[in-house]
Length: 149
Image (cartoon, rainbow, N blue to C red; front, side, top):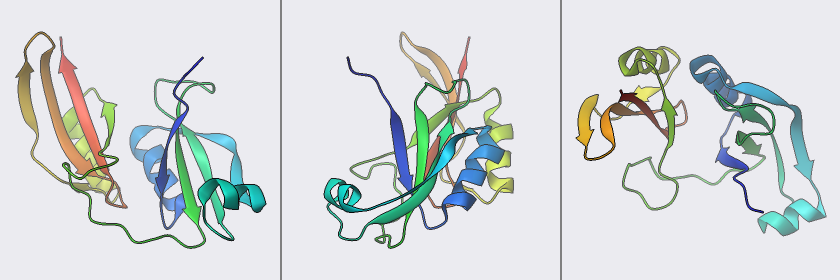
């Protein structure tokens, strides 16, 4: 059996970033909070004396056994490059929303930023989508999308 478990975001302040996703996207905390260190963590991460804290968030529209957004903060985080839609590696997380402009305003009101413009696009054999790329408070790209019926 194979099933998707979670997506992890590393941050400098896990409580602040988790609060952003809770306030903006209605994610729900999945307790217990994590506070992990020790030999197994060092071996798994390849980082000596690794220690991280954080929490899993239940994504909107899902329940406890569903995939989660895992937000962790290490005692020492490496710096990262600015987010870009075409950078190799993790690109973005996407949320289906009822109103893209309304949700974009909610992102902005909670400290996020707009990356691109709101666009409408007809995708052959898939339908019409309205979407925009935004950034969370750490600069991670978040796509807000609405598929029209």
